[in-house]
Each structure stands twice: as structure tokens, then as C-alpha cells.
Amino acid sequence: MRVSIEPEGAPQPPLAPLPANLTAERVLEVHHYTDKLFRFRVTRPEAFRFRAGEFVMIGLRTDDRPLLRAYSIASPPWDDTLEFYSIIAPNGPLTSRLRNIKAGDEILLARKPTGTLVLDALTPAKRLFLFSTGTGFAPFASLLREPETYTKFDKVIVTHTCREASELRYSEDIVNALSDDPLVGESAALHVMRYATCTRDACRRPGRITDLVATGKMFTDLSIAPLDRSSDRAMICGSLPFIRDMQNILTAAGFAEGSNANPADFVVEKAFAG
Ligand code: A2P
Image (tube, rainbow, N blue to C red):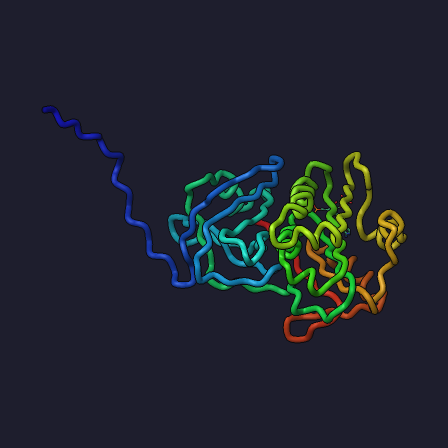
């Protein structure tokens, strides 16, 4: 009997041990929306706990040390796997590599998530406004699938503004799928409104959300009452200039910024990229 021996590839150098604050996870699924935006799912360690809206450092091994960036977790805390939504930043050291990941690849995950876009940082009220631009929608994808969002608020109004209409697809998919969600489907179908706008492309609702709030057009379009501190709370996530302008609008309307330690009327986090 002839035994054939498969030639082996060149021997691989042993992998450097990971720092104790990181675990090695596996990519389960990748979906590209545009040439700059994609989402991916990874395995979740059993001991990994987080609150909806938090972020965590994730990344890849490189020859010398792990390359890590902060990413909002887009999946809800009850999900067995973790979802992330990423932009491919021009010359971004991590995202220029992450763009090529595929199922089975390794992703590094920090053990400890954190963040301010959490329900605990807001005092009780009736309506929750979630204002986002670009990948700033990611933490809201988690909060929209978290049952506690609907026990704390009667109405959730989520806004998403991007340059081009094609960049709104992720938030559209998430919100459309809510009604079939086993945990929040019933509440979400009744209580969520999505308001999507774009600024550099033909779309149904053109314009920056800051202008649409300031002029009141958003409230007219949705047939809802204008912002009111006595009934409303808000979260803001997106680019720094957007955050600053949205913060100014809320502050002028009498809203106070909150935190984990001092819950109040609104909270803020910048969308991460790089
Ligand atoms: P615009 O096209 O008018 O700049 P970016 O990709 O630069 O982060 O922008 C994402 C979205 O956020 C774009 O639609 C952009 O509108 C909008 N945006 C940028 N800066 C602000 C701001 N200061 N206030 C409101 N929206 C903003």
C-alpha cells in the first residue's frame, strides 16, 4: 500500500502570547454594505458582559503588538454573538486590514467594555431620541434590540444622517427587522420611529438632522410634539462637529448632560473610526 504524505506549508512562527486583557475570537459572518461600510459578527466569550450602547476595544494581531480600536457593540446584550459596524477609514491602520476579514478569521476582543450611551445614564422620561450620523448608529442598533429600552420609554425616535442614501441601509435593515425580533418585536413595532436623512445625495429626506430639528421640520414630518425636556431624553453619537452642534441644540432647549455617575437628560459619544 502506498502512503502519500501531503507537503506542508512553510513553518509558521509561533504566535506571541496575547495580553491578559484580550481574548481571541472568530469571525462568524461579514456583510459589506458599500465600499466603505460593513458589519461583522464574532464569537462572544461566555464571561463577556456589557450594557446596550457600550463600546469595547477590538482588533487584529500584527507582527509586533495587537492593533486595537474602540468599537460600539451593535448587537444586544442577550445575543450569543457580537456584532460590529465599521467604516473603512482612508489609511486607517486597523480598518484597512479589517476590511479584508472573512468568516473563520481571528479578531481580538478586550475583556472589558465601557461607555456613556447607556440607559442608566438617563433619568426617567417618556420619549427617547437617538441622534446619529454615519457609524454612530451602531450603539443604537444595540439599544433598539434591548428590551429595557422599551420598559423605560414609551416612544423611541432614532435618527440617522449620512452623506449618501446607500449609507443608510444598515439602520434601515436593523429597524425593519425589529418587528420580527423575538424579544422586542411587539414593543418596537409600536414604539420605534426611524428618521433617516442624507446630505449629499438625492433622498426622501434631505438635510442635516441639526437643521431639521432646529427648524422643527423633523417633528412635523413625524407628526410628533417638539423636543421637551420634561418628557424627553436623548443620546447623540457621530462625528465631533455633529455632536457639538446637537449638544448645543439640546443645551439651548434646557437639557442637561448626564453620565453613569450623574444620570440626566442626554448623553454623548463620538463614533469611532480608524
Ligand atoms: P454634510 O454632508 O452636510 O457634511 P461625515 O461623513 O463627515 O462624518 O458626515 C456624516 C453626516 O453627518 C453627513 O451627512 C454630514 O453632513 C453630517 N454632518 C457633519 N457635520 C455635521 C454637523 N456639524 N451637524 C450636523 N450634521 C453634520
